[in-house]
Length: 481
Image (tube, rainbow, N blue to C red; front, side, top):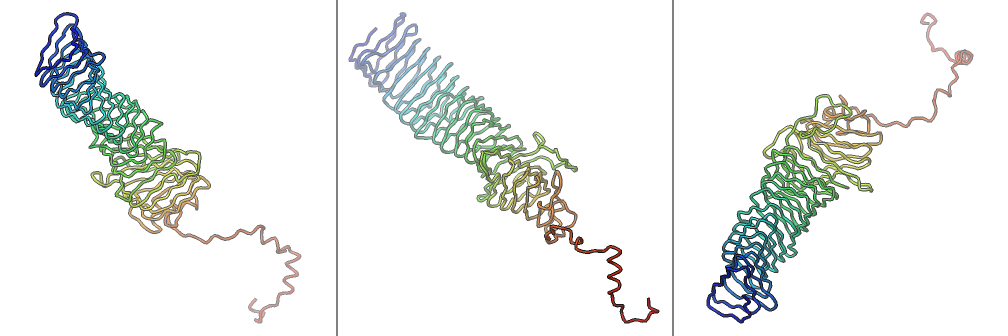
């Protein structure tokens, strides 16, 4: 049946039981409900065909309504493939069941249910808000403004998502794969298990929740945070990640790993069983606003040998990769705390691995239950530290000028609770004492003469006899000799 139109009614219910269906070529205008059924055929619009109705119900193997439609509400929809272009704000109030679906509207509100076995595409020039249920294998979104999908969703994969003028928030009840690319001004993703092989890009904040979370897809974000306590390990190890700041991230009791291809500021607080953070150029520990690590682990072995390396799953690591130019490997500002919060006093070991020649500057590193192992090589490290133990791996040209306390000891006694490998050196100092020294006595540095001063004296036997003859004996009696 071709509806050439115009077709006007208060409501209409049209059914075709043949293998044909409906072709809407004219204007169909309803005051309330339009119900179309072609269970063995299709419902399509062509040319100037359009539907204007408060509510649309449809059932067909194919529904493709691509005209200038003005539909306010979708009721019951059942189709193999469902396509709708709508110029009006649209509410999906009922149940939409299809193999594949693509919906565009001026705005989208979804209090109902969308069940799609394949891909679901949503597009709008406005906003998308959902409190119902979305259940597709793959979800793709094109929205100009905010996209808030916070209902009881069961989305297997997130495909291409573009929200250029707003924020994206997605809450999922099943494991989610982020294929991307995903872009929004700010992004929030929650899933009981999240895998990120695709690209995520935001100029604002990327918040991740639930967990475990893993993936090597490139993440570009001004700030990375957790939405809540992450239940599971976090491993974001893509070599093309560009993350400016690591904000508050709670992975307490689990491992946290982050690789960054640029300089990284750690504002925290960051909680983890053990953390591994790798950045290129510089890591800044920002304690100005209460930055901190809450980490677990163990102290260093009693006997520290030259080849000591971080113990997987036990020790925490901050590693700086050279970017081809001299850099301050690690810079700490404000008061940065370690082993505070729920793990206060928990023994832990933190490795700081720096490229050769890179420096480290500490302002006030408050880590009284931390064994700090810093690989300095030929760099220069300085600043105020409060530690349980200090290990420095240094080269011949390396140097430290630390002050503070080690194992609660201040002054000259603090340096004894540290060690320099492979060999101690006078250039490695804590509170002006050589690190590892039992006692601290700092002698002034003298200038070594260019030649042996004894070379100027002739003490041969011949010369000695001549000297003796010229010596005047003291005025005493001979019996005293």
